[in-house]
Image (cartoon, rainbow, N blue to C red; front, side, top):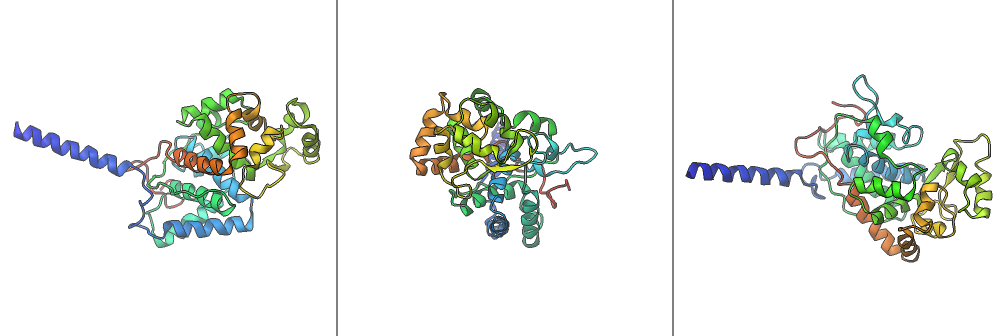
Length: 316
């Protein structure tokens, strides 16, 4: 009997230990690679200094990674005979950017701590540093993710939000990832520093009824009725390089560039959140940081799951 009790106690300690090891922590690399975050930050700042637009791209990269298989850097894997790369999925192809910035940050971290810091964690830290660099909030990134050895183009095609989504469709996509409508609206606020290709808003500026006429006319200059489908336009015309709450003010004036932006303020259940953020930038900033932390905790690989890739674009 005593032996059974002792065995049960040891088993309980094992599961408790495993649970502790599997939990993400902002101090995860304090001993194994204390300069990890500062090294990543230097690389990210340099990249955004060269191209301001990269800030929005890095935040979006983290989002597109976490919504497919969880925050596991699967989005970074190149095509192989056994891997269908997420890079070529509809929502990512010729759209998602920043891969080379993560690769560069990874190479710098590998020089000081080889085989220690995951690509998934680098993506998460890069998103935080990108936000802070352009005037957005900062937060303590919880670390300890490991990298996947698989990717899923099919899941990328089905799980990621589309610029044509309705409000209900968006809420459903976020709910499936454990994110609330408030999280969704807050995360959408990062569009204040983003850009979009003409084909994503062409139908809206030419055919939508819930759009400011002057705004639509201005946008048609960069997005003609025929041609120019890859032309870029800022999602926020007023302060395109600053992380602020102007995105929400635009929505209240029917100046959302994407259909999936304007549905957040179109007589639906999220109108009140948009209004709140338009009036209270501090609340938006706080909620955005909280939502990013929450999103970064979507199904991470921890403990002995996955691996620490030496090169982010390929499995070891």
